[in-house]
Image 1: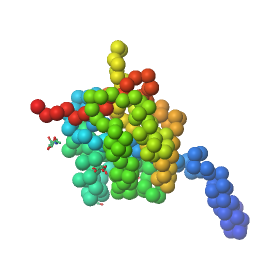
Image 2: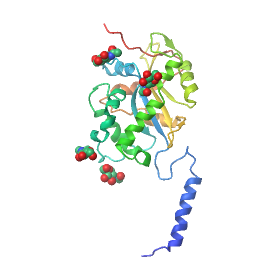
Image 3: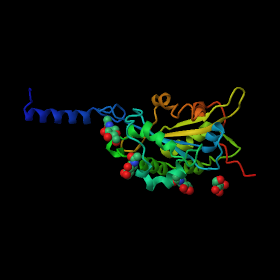
Image 4: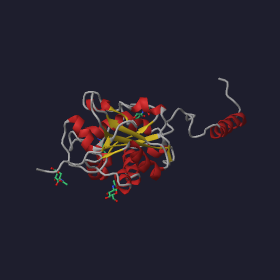
Amino acid sequence: MNVLPSGRMRFIAVAVILCAGFFWPTAFAHPLGEWTKLILTQHWPQTFCSVEKCTTNLSFWTLHGLWPNSGMRCNTSWHFNASLIEDLIPEMKKYWPDLRAPSSPQFWKYEWTKHGTCAAKAESLNSQHKYFSKALELYHKFNLTNVLKNNRIMPSEQHYTLDEVETAITSFYNVKTKIQCVHPGKGGQVQILGQIEICVDRDFQLIDCEKSTEEIWSNDIPAVAVSGQSELSVCDHSMPVYYPPVPSRS
Ligand SMILES: *[C@@H]1O[C@H](CO)[C@@H](O)[C@H](O)[C@H]1NC(C)=O
Ligand SMILES: *[C@@H]1O[C@H](CO)[C@@H](O)[C@H](O)[C@H]1NC(C)=O
Ligand SMILES: *[C@@H]1O[C@H](CO)[C@@H](O)[C@H](O)[C@H]1NC(C)=O
Ligand SMILES: *[C@@H]1O[C@H](CO)[C@@H](O)[C@H](O)[C@H]1NC(C)=O
């Protein structure tokens, strides 16, 4: 075997590290093919349930997922294990519920297998506990329910313009987010606010959610289980936005 002298090895190693640092502006690909961006996705329970025919009285945005921009199902033998995140479960039940089956861990298992195992390629997220607790942390930090409310965008029968919603969100986060709506069928007059994506870099700092990721991630949920999600698409400026309130109990 032809072994390189260790001095030369060391030189190569150092050169590789230097180049990686040098040619790696955060917007570009990671040198090891890892993700460069995480998409924190939240959905509005009333809209979700109007499509999925579930019922919910939740009046805050709930977590949908934390998705890296590269990779899916990166390690299918790394099984979800709820006992590893036992301390997080009460919070997950509240803020990350499976709206179709509120007491089931199925949704977390799905998100872990599809996205978490890829996020876990970064040391900062390389365990189930790190992944789920980071998602919850970011969710609290970027409190969307609060941001909208502080800008007087409240669930109600009143309609908003997409500009109003965008301005509220952008003025707080200062980055481009992705705002998705359920569009009406033929002849419909309003679009229903459904899902909002907020993006962070590998240091969990806010960055723009670029257009290029939109197509890739717009069909996240399993086709059968959450068929209605395919009705979500980027809200458009030509139509009023409906932010549906929690129906009053009768
Ligand atoms: C929402 O529904 C749950 C379960 O049915 C109930 O325990 C809770 O009191 C309700 N909350 C509100 C605000 O109506
Ligand atoms: C996949 O996950 C399993 C279980 O955690 C682990 O033993 C294995 O090394 C992982 N495989 C890869 C390619 O990371
Ligand atoms: C889940 O994790 C716990 C705690 O580490 C461990 O004892 C248990 O064997 C794991 N369960 C499975 C099915 O891997
Ligand atoms: C968001 O902010 C509101 C109002 O300050 C608070 O009641 C709520 O608990 C916060 N939600 C999260 C997930 O931190």
